[in-house]
Image (cartoon, rainbow, N blue to C red):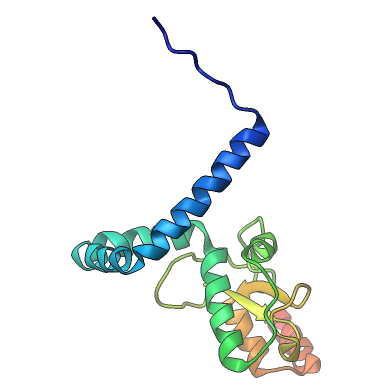
Amino acid sequence: MTAKVETLTPEQLEAHRSSRRVYNKAYYDKHAEKFRADSKAYRRTNLTLVRSKERNYYIENPEILLFKCAKQRARKEGLPFTITAEDIRCLIPVDGLCPITRVPFKRGVGKVGQQSMTLDKIDPAKGYVPGNVAVISHLANTIKQNCTDPQIFLRLAAYLERR
């Protein structure tokens, strides 16, 4: 004799998932200390593996690292922060080149180099809000940060073209 398999409607399925979410959250809240302790122990025991996975994750998803770092800077500097990681993902040039230097981005995690991606605030006073940020290289961002006079940029460009 075979058991009859019941098919759930989409509404029933969503209700079931919702009830499981509530149950799982309550269970986690009740046992949060144990979960945290187990997580810390695993990380301590497998630190090399965990760091390797984190590095690979951030290399594959640079917008997440840019988002996290920008959020920390905004909090520290008291700036508005309303962008999302998806906003940043949309700003990363498809061709993989810095829009200013036209040099390929060098993706990595750890030390920041001249070709690393950075999140630039076009108007620093406005903070990290949609329409006020761009993804450019660290080199371009450093040049822009240290010199805000457009005339100097134009003279520098003219000088470089003459060489």
